[in-house]
Length: 233
View 1 (cartoon, helix red, strand yellow):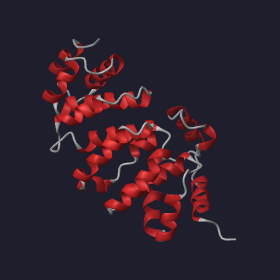
View 2 (view 1 turned 180 degrees about the vertical axis):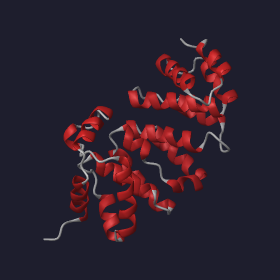
View 3 (view 1 turned 90 degrees about the vertical axis):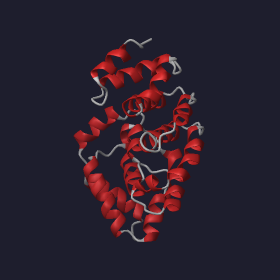
View 4 (view 1 turned 90 degrees about the horizontal axis):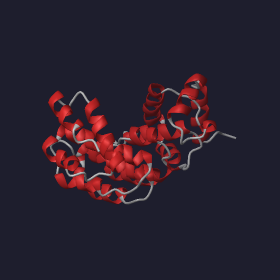
C-alpha cells in the first residue's frame, strides 16, 4: 500500500531527528508533551517546507494542510511554514482559520506568519477582531502578533492599542505577548504608547513586564529607559 502524504512527512521528519535538540526543545516549549517532539532544527524545517511547497501536488498539499490535528510539534511547524508561503489571500485565510485552534505552543504561533497578509491589511483587521475574542490562547496571541507585525508602522492607529488593552485572557503566553506588543509600540509609537503606562491601563504584571522588555530593547533610548523605570508599579 502506498504511503499517505502525512506518513511520508512524518517519515521525513524522523529522518532529520536530532535527539539532543529534542531535549532542548522540550524545555523551551513546555506546553507540548515530550513524546510529540521529534527534534528537527528550524532551518531544516524551513528548507523542507519550501521543497514540499514546490514538489507536492495540489491534492497532497490539501491533504497535509487538512490533516488536523497533527501528531508532532514539527508537523505543526511545517504546516505553519508551508501556509506562510501561500500567495492567495482567501486560500491562506481558509487554511489559517482551520489551523489556529490546533496551535498549542508559542513557537508555532509566533513562527506562523503568512506573507500574503501584509498585502491585505484592511481585510485582515476584522479577522484580528474575531481572533482577539476567540477564547483560545494561541489564537489570541496570534492576533496580537499580527497587530504588532503589521499595524505599528505606517498603518498604525491608536485604537489598535486599545484592542490589545481590552484582552482579558490571563494565560501567561497571552500576557507575555501583550507585554511584547506594548514594548514594541514604545519603540515605534512612543507618544501614543506611553500614556498606556502613565495611566496604568494594563494589569500590574503586564505593565511591569512591558517596561522590562522595553528597557532591554536597543530601540529605546537611554533617556526613555530612565523614565520608564520610574513608571514601575
